[in-house]
Structure formats: C-alpha cells, structure tokens
Length: 75
Image 1 (cartoon, rainbow, N blue to C red):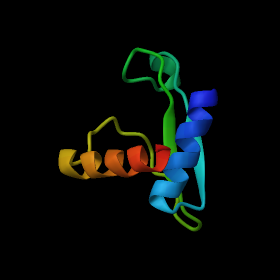
Image 2: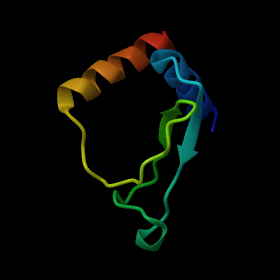
Image 3: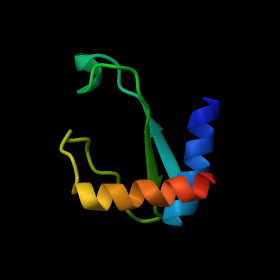
Image 4: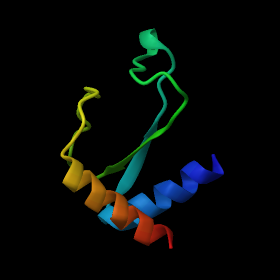
C-alpha cells in the first residue's frame, strides 16, 4: 500500500488531477480480467464521471507519454 500511495501522489501531480480512485478486482466474478494481483490508480477530475472498466488498451503512444509523466513526478 505504501507503493500505491506513492504512485497515487505522483499520478495526481502528473495529471494535475483533483483526486484519485484506487481499484482492485479479485477473480472473474469481481470483474478481474488480468489474473494477477494489481491495483488500478485512476486520476480523477471534478465533474468527470468514472467510466466502466472495459479491459481495452489505450493508444500505446499516449500511454507511453503518460507513463513518462508519472515517472517524472516520482523523481
């Protein structure tokens, strides 16, 4: 959880978010699609609704740029 907190703070900073939602799904009945333990850190913005988890991957170039922003915020 210490790592989740660290990544959450960095994500809020990297995206200039208003807050963050943390999710963890367990087993298929719980909505898990990737069957190893992992945590979703979702930057949130006031007035923007959370969309359902679809399991679809986003654009790889956008994801790489976002990952770099988070990496910089961790430094």
